Length: 293
Image (cartoon, rainbow, N blue to C red):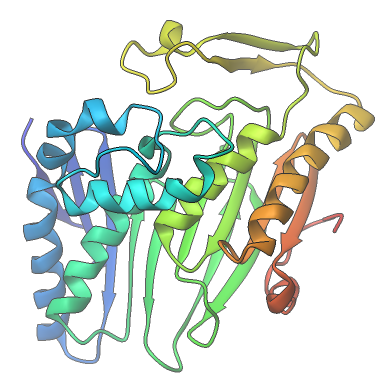
């Protein structure tokens, strides 16, 4: 299947190639600038999947600082984003593939055009561009489209990437969180962190959590040999709190190291919010219903 592009009725660009599905927005007072940016996005997008496929064996392997760096720029973004975690966690560069693709396409747009705002949304993992004075307001939703809260991101904040991971996402999770949404300086950093936090929100050996080997669900998985969550039954309030707290502890560690700015964790009606110490004002942006900080 070859890469495909189509203009949406609202002016956004939809790009699709295999498992990659992007929604792209560009904003400028000049229409010609928008056209230039969207054309650049398409030109860069056309070859990304082929580049990644050529290096898949490396990208699906457990990553360490000693590993050989890949050739492609998107693949390198993926590897660099997981390197800080590789000493203590099993992680592959595929943990950050969606964020890396979004960043790569966005960078091609901003190099070619002077945009006021832009975003590349790769299935919920989003790379942002904001010129001074600009902002975005985003709604975080569950799999049924119900709002989980809103976040406003302005140009004077460090946030330029948003990513969501969890049991209900496109890939398999080691944990039971319904979803974990992370705000970070880059989309690739948000993607890697969301994966790890979602994995940590768990109840090992709990009888209502059904698990199986990752390869039973996907023969091409990068999690071969690992037990992933297939289903999660109804939990008690205490169980939910315990699982979320395990994720919160990992989120706090990552935030304290300055790798991400904030994280919101959701599980069966409960939520938790974690914020990096220097960016406490994020709590004013994220309007979480019934959040327990």
